[in-house]
Length: 151
Image (cartoon, rainbow, N blue to C red; front, side):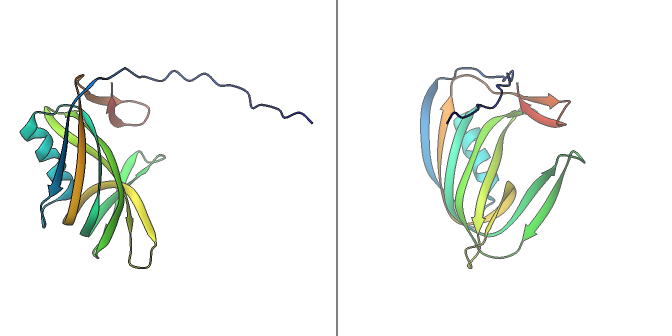
């Protein structure tokens, strides 16, 4: 019995090879803003481009959901303690400053998962790993999505 393969679709992806140089690990300050802490680390160390992972817990959070029909972010606020089960993102220059594009999976006491673009959250405890790229990653406006994306 043979299996039919789906037709191959060629997608023109924008990509480039990057070289990593420095890596940092750090503890986020209790009571600080989660994303701002990552941006502060990048600014202090002169990291214009990089990739990060983080984990920990927050006291509250605002997640954004991007509506692909409206081309707008819609905030969802959570005023409760949450575990940061996973947090990934990248640092790139936006309007001359480091911007931490941050996505997170948060969990409630019940184990229910919440996920989205992390706009802000108050750190209870957090740890971050940031890997710097040699090549700059600059965000520019993308007409199709109405988002600021990597070149």
